[in-house]
View 1 (cartoon, rainbow, N blue to C red):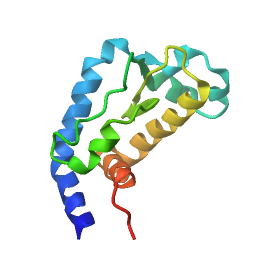
View 2: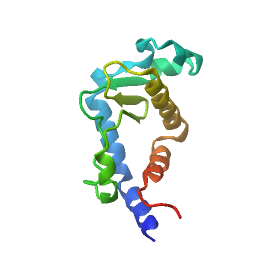
View 3: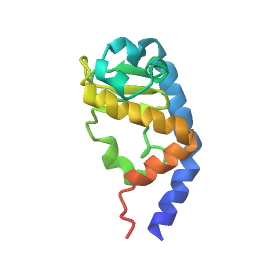
View 4: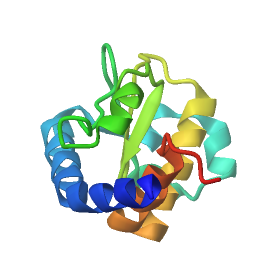
Length: 138
């Protein structure tokens, strides 16, 4: 019963999450650089060049930007908002808190860029949100 309520609440705020993501990407657009410009040679063995040109990275000081889900009404996610994440991806852009980006983290976040592209914004957010759900399935 509680899981159903949480899913309904997540669906209710989904447009706000999408708007927050769009605002955040716009805010940082001048700081974003193509992943290809990082010259991480092993990525080219795994990902196509057009993806490395299209995907962008933003290095931030402090914490990576996270949607304020608890302020949007999902208090069950308040603990997640306090995590010190190394990186997070929104659409074709990922945010990292490293000035020198480890190649493993870039690889990980590029996988999320591909997931955003394949699933689309709302389906990605639904799948990712379900994976972060603090309530166990069983």
